[in-house]
Amino acid sequence: MSRPSRSKAHGFSAFSTALGVALTLGVLGTLVVGAMVVRELRTDWLASMTVQIVLEEGADGSRMAVDWLGEEGVQSAVYIDADSASAEMERELGEPFMDFLGDSPLPSLIELTLDPEWIDREGVAGLAALASGWEGREGVTRVAYPRRILERLERGFSDWTTPLVLLLAIFMAVAVAQIFNVVRLSVFGRRQLIRSMDLVGAPPSRIRQPFIAEAMGYGLVGATLAYAAVVGLLGLLKPFLSVLEGWGPEKLGLLMALQVVMGLLMTGLSARWAVARYLGARLDKLV
Image (tube, rainbow, N blue to C red; front, side):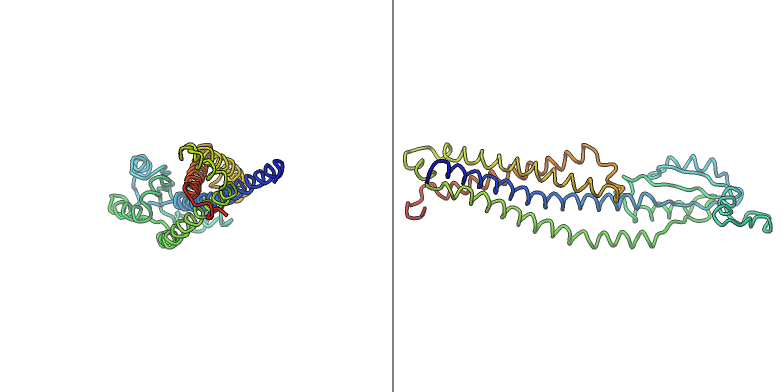
């Protein structure tokens, strides 16, 4: 075979290897990003929920709201008196019911929003424990929040967590096998060269080094292409997923680091294993 033909074949092998690594890491990165998005959606939904502390008549709501700001898991506390609550309801209903009722039918209350990090860590069970303690406080009639909806939401996330983790583990194994196979095929085309270097007395480490470096170069190129593809997908989904608005260099950098490390590690180990198969092999096994 002429030198240009060999160069062309090697170039095609390099392209197919980098593309195979890119496709594998791209799908893996998409699964990881999907898991991160689902987790953030859960936190966002839980944190967007408000807790209403219904007060007894005559309770000092302004002072109690200030006290509640120091509570664990509370991000903000707003006191809404009975008249303000009734005026807000009149605006929503479009009917001035206060004209014929006279007194406000609504109680005064404190509206709480929760800290996202705390609700993500403690979940619905932690909120239920806090609400139980708050209901026993002086001046509090009851604590209202959509407990059943949140429990159902939490249960739904829990039910999906185990299958998703298993799916990710299975795909990780498939991804490793795929990259190993792609790199092995790339090395296979130069098995005669590996055996020739072995026969002239070249140390195994010197034989492996250029193949491992080349394979890791494919891994770096493939990881870069995979990262670009995943970031492009996130850009397309950004208008539809509000949680992506907060994704900055920290999370995107973590994603890139994960893909680069996986690409370098898997291609490097694959090349080491593939070259080792032909070191010391019989000549008739190389055909």
